[in-house]
Length: 258
Image (cartoon, rainbow, N blue to C red):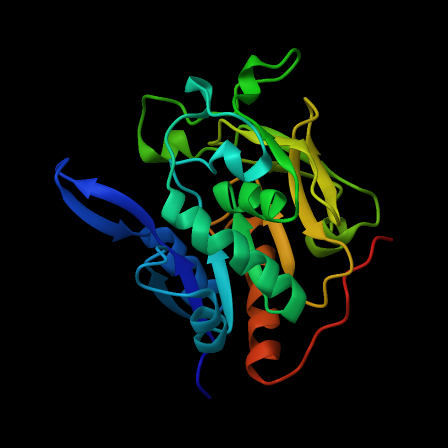
């Protein structure tokens, strides 16, 4: 039986500061292939090369990856400032309408870090440019030094709504995650349900209320050690089940709060 096909959103970058490229982390492909049981294919997220109708016709679902560039604040009606960092307007132009198309069709996606923020913005929400500058918030950014293992180590806990979608999926109300982000949700978009929070109140887990498909998003990076981490593995396994259902022509029931 053919594996469902997952489009992994690529990020634009310059190799050696001069050669333009689209890239995706190997750990994203590993998680999709080895835990979700799907075929991972990298998408050049640029409207010069792909369109949303083409993508939804050729893929069973999408992994909305993390990335250093942030969603441009114009997408949620705010002015650009130095705190907003760098941007990838081409990715904005593809992923934001892609999210809305998937929500409408029931086509599954799993959103990670920037992808989590994209889902919120696509549904009409806004973002804080720098979480660590807010009173009472911790620094959620990736440590600037250390090994890859140290940068992706589990650094804080996330609490889920009792009886909610993530609580049922994880089998626990509280889990421990990594954290490698600067921005975060300020106002949730329409139909965005915040289902998990860090201890400082930062939203960490969301889904789209009433969407007919799989629309889970997390602010942490579950692709790290996805095959062995007790939080990451059920997330990618559930994504795989949704992908196989879509590929087989089935449509899962609408997600609901408890």
